[in-house]
Image 1: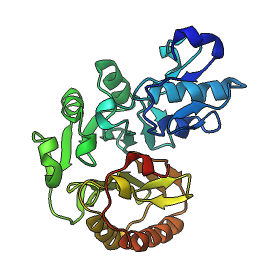
Image 2 (image 1 turned 135 degrees about the vertical axis):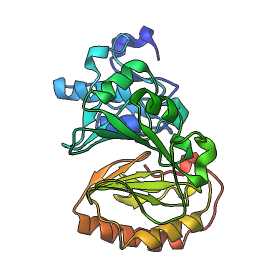
Image 3 (image 1 turned 90 degrees about the horizontal axis):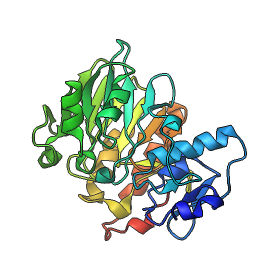
Length: 295
């Protein structure tokens, strides 16, 4: 739906890929119908209007359209603080299947970027405004687009695991094996093969888990889930990764690339991860099916 439908107010046009990002940012205003996002109702106040502007500026297909059809750049809220340490980058990229990316602020005033938003010099300037970006941390191959460009712009180190190295062959730091690697004070990389051979979790301050596509919070099941219908490498390896890590991971914030975010006490996160490891051990390989994801 384009500008000819401006009189209808906020709309989601037919390019929507049902990635769930808009529904995460504007719950109650944007919902799912017929395997795509739709506007459930128009905003009633400024706060709801701001949520729709956030959804519009995050949407990787630019399908969320305001009245008049043209985005207002002055209403762009990104990077958006989730708390005093993590910011959501927004501006999701079509070259990363619309994945979320994040900025992790460090005590010395620097930041790290986890996965990448769409590329533009203007956006890069926004992301380095909170502080110099020292590292670009890639969780896996599907989210590697723009990594080199952002790293070069920031003068940062680009990280990826050897299992997905062909997606970023010019990375500055290559993670190997399955053992945890400290990459900065308070920041740990944990190789997590399963979704892809080179999937990695990044853990910070025993508080934040940037999980890429290894697991996410599902609003449908109100629990942590794996995307078994989109596991490119091995669901059995993913179960093994979960089993190895379930009792060792300590975090309160689950921050995935796809799927919703969640903040819970670390004891509850640990319990839910143990249950997820047990459930995943019962899963078997299945054909890739994007429509089967339980957002």
